[in-house]
Amino acid sequence: MAETLRYPIPAETALEPPAEWARLRDECPVARVTLASGDEAVLITRYDDVRAVLSDPRFTRTGPGRGARVSDAEEGGVFSSEMATVLPQHGEAHLRWRRMIGKWFTARRMTALRPGIEAMAGQLVDEMVAKGAPADLKAALGFPLPVWVICDMLGVPDADRDRFAHWSDMMLSMTRFTQEEMAAGQREFGAYMAAHLHAKRADPGEDLLSALLRETDAAGEPLSDAVLVATGIGLLVAGHETTANMIVKMVGMLLADRDRWAQLLADRSLVRTAVEETLRMDANAGFGMVRYFDQEVEIAGTTLPSGTTAVCSMAAANRDERRFTDADRVDLRRGPNPHLAFGAGAHACIGQPLARTELQAVLDVLLRRLPSLELAVDVDDLRRVEGLVVGGLRELPVRW
Image (cartoon, rainbow, N blue to C red):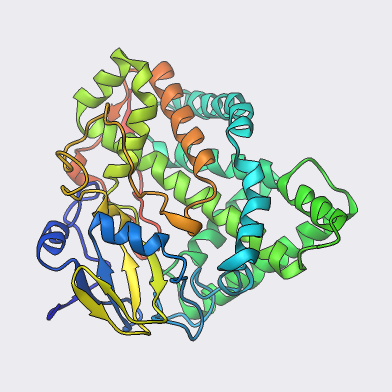
């Protein structure tokens, strides 16, 4: 662990991983890195190590004054926002919060949502086709759909979705926005969500936030306004940005090799496993999960002192040959596929059933409506989004 790398590690192309990942997994599975903030951390890249750290209840997220800063912003970013300090991070309080939210992401609810998601995807595809090719699939479908879904779940007007996209970018910024812009965005987002919750108390609906208000008030254990605001912001950011980017990357990966798209057209039953494989193969997943060690710990033969901040790269771990046969090959039939795209342990993504439902619905609709879909640019010309915690493509030009 002698060398120190800059993190995130740049990649030469938008859909392929940095060449450094394979070397780190083999030679330096616990590597010293310098973050955008200038703070130091360690990068963990092997599957078993990443899963073990994420699953260990002793290790929780960083926060203000606790561990390395991801960006140089003292406030406003997702890791230093009110969301990072107000929401319970561990123990019974965290489990209670997850149980309350998790009721809205059951398989039964996802099955009920699926027809509406497919209908909205179909409408967006029709609008894209009407405008003619080439088109940017990100602007036409990838970003509007998840915003519509999460706004509907939270009872938020569709008309406000562009504001959410802007606020989400600010919350997820590492280097794109200034300290002042990020802090202002967080204040605006918080004020909006507080007003939205006030309106829901006065006139509750059938949405998730109204249900939280009813259930916790009736139980005599109401959640504080700060927790409710942070919950709404967290779900909007997570339910919009990550899924929107993954829709675009998934379609990009499947169109990058025409044989993959042809395989799906020939056998639609592969949609579910194809979604899981693109989640595993996503080399542009973003920053990774950060954990703070408040005690000495040994990982892959390296002893790390108390006070260490670790960055767990699920994307690098998902390409570990020790866990996946032919790890760098896309196999649309791969199963089982225990990838770590949604994390692991008590902090695994609570909305992963919704993300999977949206990804499967979008892929089904595109295969059905646009079987001739193809990239409108060379795959090497696709460009990454830079400066955000969540990885994505700037656009996805397509034709049909």
